[in-house]
Length: 273
Image (cartoon, rainbow, N blue to C red; front, side, top):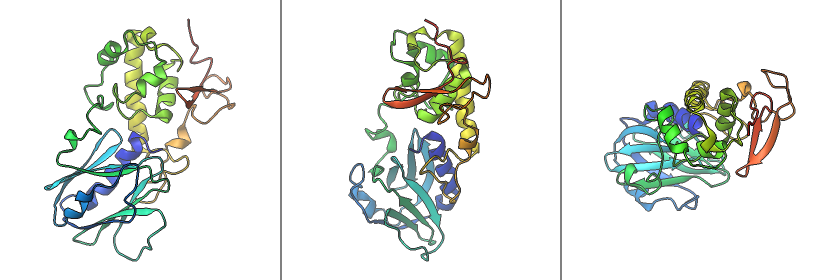
């Protein structure tokens, strides 16, 4: 599913086409997504788009008449169309059309995304319990160390907990733990301060690199310009079960942790008990 880098890529891709524009209309073809599409969207004709931002995995379209929270769900994507010559596809559920004719089209085969209106995005219950942004100054080794105390959960589940830090999805958690040399099954309370420092550093590095490369295309994600994300080409462990580790040559292993496939090198990420 689209994770933080994919959403950030989408924000950067669509923002230049939307900011400063006025909404002509929002066409909703499928109102039943993960949650019902907010009926307030039909009242945004003439609203000016002030900014396009991201919070966790939510894309926020800010207008002078309230905010639109967009979630890409499991397989959603956004595209920018400059005219009406593109035929509407089976899974093209929402169009936001601006006064200049630009169309932001939302496609979602699994219908697990969302288009929600809120007077202020920050007041939405969807954002209320979210933790710090991983690329912000608030995400420090001291913060992670403090949050990790007395937690017996596996460290992979811990860094994927959106109440601790947002947007570190399955792919990027596997990659970050490999780069930090930490076994994904390590009990969180056993993290050392040095490991917390290393983990914060590599999470920031991995996410930044993925954003610069347009995210990760495995099955569904494409950028708003129609191009795939290229981070998949440099994955170190994710999806590489049985292949040799790029650092030591040991076959990559996989196991289920927190109901998610988890990939790691048993030598580089040795679990010390």
